[in-house]
Length: 329
Image (cartoon, rainbow, N blue to C red; front, top):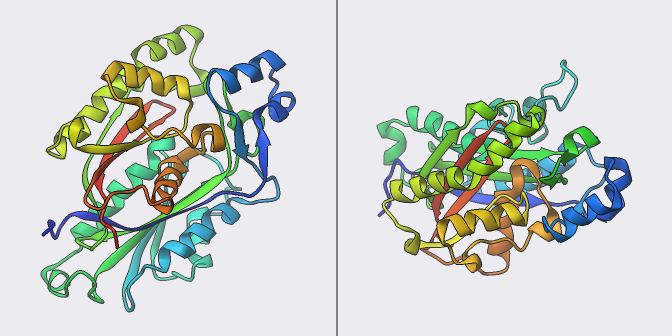
């Protein structure tokens, strides 16, 4: 039996706009020469992405959130709604997107807040943080009710943000950002996928992100693979495993060349890193891990009882890795 205090992911859902564009089509709007666009496509492996200017961030965030909430047991309550995002400013200062998402979902009694400090790792960090809040308020009465008892509290982690301008869509020499949304319904001690570990590291010397100097950018590139490998190894070790026990790495979709560097650094079998969505969807801010998870799940490629490693990196620079044991339901 699993630990009754373990964080469990009860349902993960994602959403992608139907409109597909090629990176070449965005070259002019992003200020890229044809040769530079070709590098993104041929070297970095970013070919297509989903992008629809008609969508708002709510059009991205709400559909997967509603589907995830369908897994909420009858009589259960959502205690927290946490909106994880990368871009610091997404709405006018008099609007609170986290509360607006909560209210649009009819979860008026839930506490709503946002997490963005870890950029694209914020979704993993939000799961870890809100699980601690749930765990702190879980008393013996809650535990006595069983895995689906009405007193069990849940949280909903939601992602979704738009690549609304060239400034936030292009990471020079790294990625072209795309539209997507995702949601994760979680609780403590439920029947869902078990979070077995979470390890994060922030390289504060690269906190300037897009404003790094060329020299700092080169330095970061030189340490990136080794640093990320260390975080991945740490998460696997904390889960009491080695990499032979990891069924698949479910990564962020930054680009192919960065992942090839990590694969080489770690001596991994490339087939054990799920990179199929990189050329199809590009990098979708904090949603990548969940988009990739849903792709694997819906194609029947997740193994019951197997362990998976979610990995993401955020500008600033935060590296995160989470081991999750899948349980088919």
